[in-house]
Image (cartoon, rainbow, N blue to C red; front, side, top):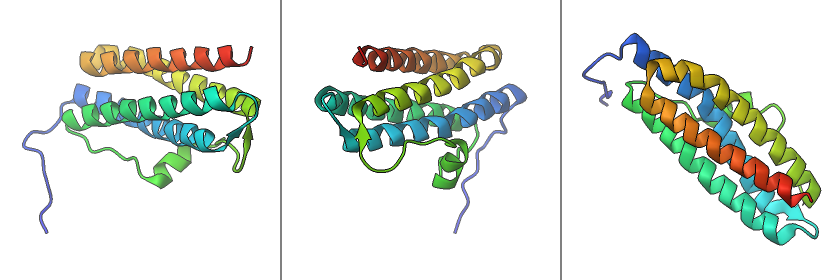
Length: 156
């Protein structure tokens, strides 16, 4: 068995950016999984729009997680999206079983704003060390905040 190695060693800025992206990755994966769980289990009068919205959230967050991971790898670092790593950051996942529409709105909004906070916190670091990673993080933050707004508007 051969082990893949990179031909160049990442510099300090690349390592800092990749480490920052790695810290975001499991949060995004956890959010995508919880959104899909909500998609399958939402009940109540808001079922139809929430069923569609949670599917959109899950799909978009998966895309963002992939972009974050691929940027870290492009910077020369491996990434860790294994279940145990994801579980270690998801201390308050959605409950199992059926979820009332109001519960989906409340819980996913909370999770989205928690992840948004982590992304926002990463911006200062990424701006100083990797403009591309910073740009990806800004796009992720914009999308998360849009989904948070859409969920809050569903509550009305």
